[in-house]
Amino acid sequence: MSINPKKNPVDRTAVSVAFTVGLYGAAFGAAGVTAGFSILQTCLLSILLFSGASQFAVVGIMGAGGSAISAIATATLLGFRNALYGLQMAPILKVGGLKRVLAAQITIDESTAVATLQENDEDRKRGFYVTGIGVYIFWNLFTYLGALGASAIGDPSVWGLDAAVPAAFCGLIWPRLKNKTQFLVSAIAIAWALLLTPIAPAGIPIITTVLLAVIFGVKK
Amino acid sequence: MSAIWIAVIGASVTAFLNKYIGHSVPEKWLNKPGFMRINALVPIVLLSALVGVQTFTNKKELVIDQRFAGVIVALIALRFKAPFPVVVVSAAITSAAIYNWF
Image (cartoon, rainbow over all chains, first blue to last red; front, side, top):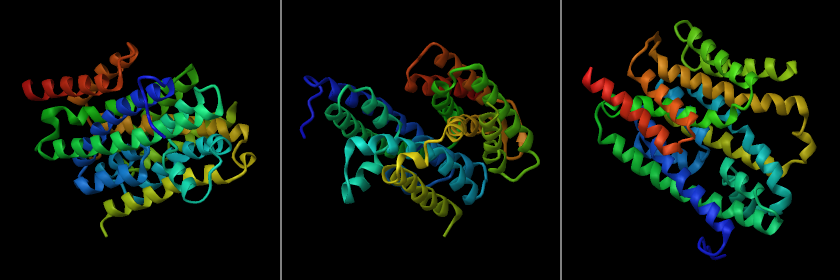
């Protein structure tokens, strides 16, 4: 497969999404090092875990002093949407064996989103692979650069990295808030986590907000 | 093995399982309406809680500092549909300015 962003509109969308999202990897790289992860540990999360929200959650929870279990549980719950993307993509990709392993690894928000924008299965496949592989390359490259940059900085507050991390999360939540209930649930989750922080072990204030999702999800 | 290593490897394994399971099970196993509604809310509550904790806490104390100003600016940028890098960088600049000069 040759990629031609100038002539092929699917490639154009895929490559521009991949590059923009990849840049964001620098914010993750910086967040990892700021949270006390080594450059190697930060990069391994991008190579192996490869799902932005879950990666930010792991470094966020460990950085706040949470346990490995609560970091893993939170990241797993956040990553469950990738299983749903896999369900959508499997009948289009029709791959098995090693190819399925590789397709699974690049099944993320962006690759699925670009695929579902296309009009036929041929373009959907192309959109999925070009976006997925493109994000993988740029995300890992910029994670490394971000981690390297942050490790050269002593106090993260001097460069505003302490605010860049929650700002990055805001960017992840914003597109998901489409109605009043979702805004309300978001506000309650923040209040819940803050109320529990002084009294519960780190990580617990975050993972227990899943109860809110269950309550509001079942109610309707 | 340190807690960070356990978190890195453990979360990577479960992330891959999530992805691989989606490609391998029949659709009807996961596609249930109540379950889908809960699942749509899960990222909202977890990420919101993370924003709260990372903006307003220092260890186990609740604090208001330069990070809050940074996040406010990020929200304004998002409100005006700014791209991701602008959101993050404007928050960082705001927070750094307050931290360094006040």
